[in-house]
Length: 222
Image (tube, rainbow, N blue to C red; front, side, top):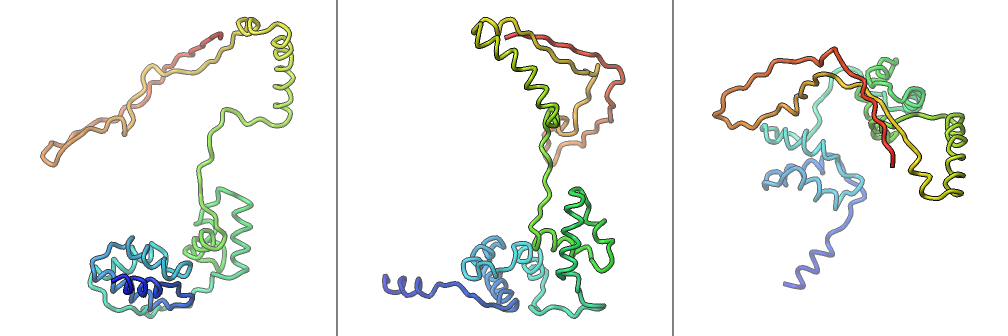
């Protein structure tokens, strides 16, 4: 038994070359064995490494087609002109548009002549390596002049602190202000309730925030 395990371990290796038909055959075989798509993709990655099909191709494309009764592993013939959008020139154009406007939408880029919407997505995600993120919120965006003014205002406090010690901090009083609405309705997530299949359908009418509001000013010391 130990000898068989050693021989099987030696047989496991990385395939540097493979065809799409070969990988689709592997997906079909493992799918017929009852493997989950994510398990199929994980096992294929051990052999094909960077040549392996993407998880979305294994899951949303081929496993879904096999589940719906699809048996053919070849690509269907496509009508129309071939897709030639994935070129170095188009990649450079898309990269320049993204760098010119970091909030540009894929639909805006796809309006350029010779660049299809699907190719724009492939260029941005696969070739250029971009991915969209939300910018973190910060209290204020300060330029160099604002930072210098704040530093000059803080220097006298630091000098007093070094000369007079901890009791100087008791003399500092700071404050802040904000607008508070008279009434703030609950959000949709806050209004969620638990129910089971036999529960009646609950309804909730939309309520708008109140127009009237107050200015709240708060002061505090150490």
